[in-house]
Image (cartoon, rainbow, N blue to C red; front, side, top):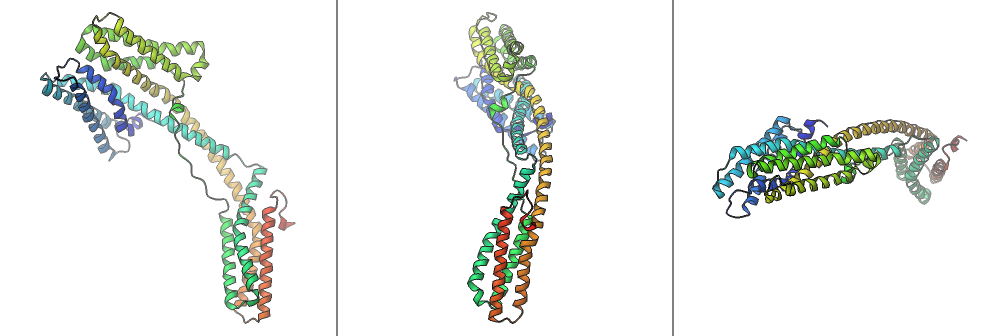
Length: 462
């Protein structure tokens, strides 16, 4: 998956993605508006909702328009849509603050903050979700391919005999009802055959002959459709951590970009320094925990990588929260109390985001290579087995041509001759008896063909 395919794919403007962004953006708006003198406490929530609706509508509508011309939206178009959404969000926030609270709308500041957050967060989040969904699809395709390879193992002599036996039974079972019905009709009417009855018997035998030929042409059956499945969430996430320090650095940087500017603007430089210290400490924990586990017990990291990541994340949130509330760098504790929820959400989302972007991108490349090998093996197996089935079908066709189709053709010729000639009652009875004997012989031949061991000489050849 290329960067354009990931960022310009369905998640670039997916409504479900926007719903997932509602909690963190709401917390950020609550922080931004914590010092805005709104007349009621719920106005920041109204502002957050309006901002999200305006930005979400811009992204969804822009994406829908772009997809009318492009299946994969070009990257400049994607970034332009996100930039317009950030502008709309900042402008809406300023208008509400100015109209309701009577303060300076600070359009430039608000728009710049949302533009910066969009540039840092949205590409990484969309890329991460796209890689995660691709992993689910790849794992599902691998499972289907493995099952298909297992079921398409090369036919040995025994399985080839089984194929031949299945073909014989399929043909015999398909013809048996028609032969039984024809035999019953002959036994019931052989004493009263007239020219019309002879013509009708000839037509029915002709249909039986054609049906036999059709069966031999399609005896290998219809190929089954390949199911499409997607792996579960737990299976898709089951990938050992890779490059933990790179992931920790990206989590730290993105969290700082998201929160630092507003903390500095609202609470001052001491709160900003405290945030930096808490975020860097959280990043150190995120990188240190998997590194230590990998050095002490590598197998544990491989088998329980997700649990170790979860433990590292919980510890990082605990450390950062403790520092925000107890470090004393910023003496005003309630500043930290407002920041801690947003900091925890930011660390959580950023950890999941960069884990998918870094770890799953590599894992998906390996899974795609594995799928390619399986598909090549499956194509080779199917070609081999199709050749075997075609060869066995031809053997069955050759076997059927003499005893079965030959007798049917002889009956048809005799009936056609008598249908155009004047025959006495005795001649008609003799004809019916002869045809009936042939039909019984055909039924016996079919039984012999179906019951014979395909690995032994065919019964009609002995």
